[in-house]
Length: 101
Image (cartoon, rainbow, N blue to C red):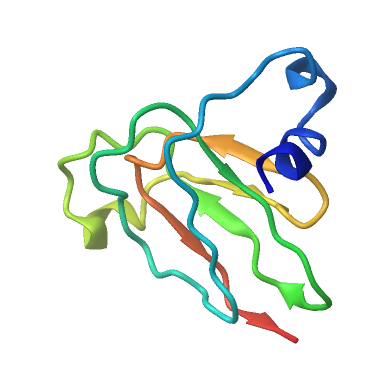
């Protein structure tokens, strides 16, 4: 699984080995706005399957302390992790949009 994900990263990462201490697999789950606990290093999100929606919303300006209900109103970026894996800091706010399929 690690090699499969590594092979789908943007070309700039193909010659680098990304360290991996754990993996989380989710099925039929749209995670609500949250921060991961105790992540070390970058997180990589990849979506597979036949569905619509389900993009990753990420708040890169999160300070890690703001109440999540206030964070939602802040600017965010959206990644289509079905077309391209997203590399992000999972200790900052992120969620998965609703999806169908």
